[in-house]
Image 1 (cartoon, rainbow, N blue to C red):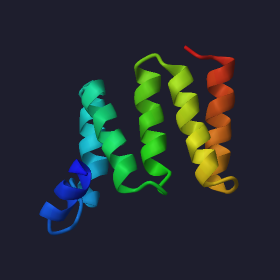
Image 2 (image 1 turned 45 degrees about the vertical axis):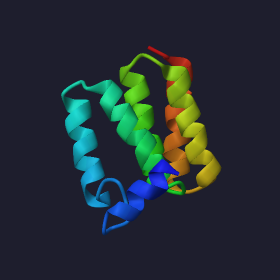
Image 3 (image 1 turned 90 degrees about the vertical axis):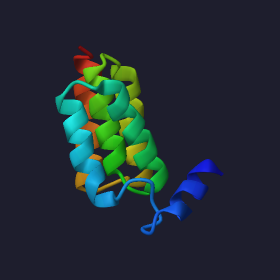
Length: 103
């Protein structure tokens, strides 16, 4: 309910303008603000539940946090949304890489 109310309060209907999410995420990740980057990706998933981008970004955060198990779960979410194509191929490669070398 809070997310819906916040969306209605913005003219674009979102909490963060979609065009700014990626740059803000990269800034947070680049400055090692991992908890904030993770929170942004969680919000991003709510804004675009069928978009694979937030899941890939969330996986990057989990890898940096030393949580390959959580990153692999993000890649599985990508596969649930796109079972084939370039996104699926990348997700499968990353899963294999993390399972082989989790560190």
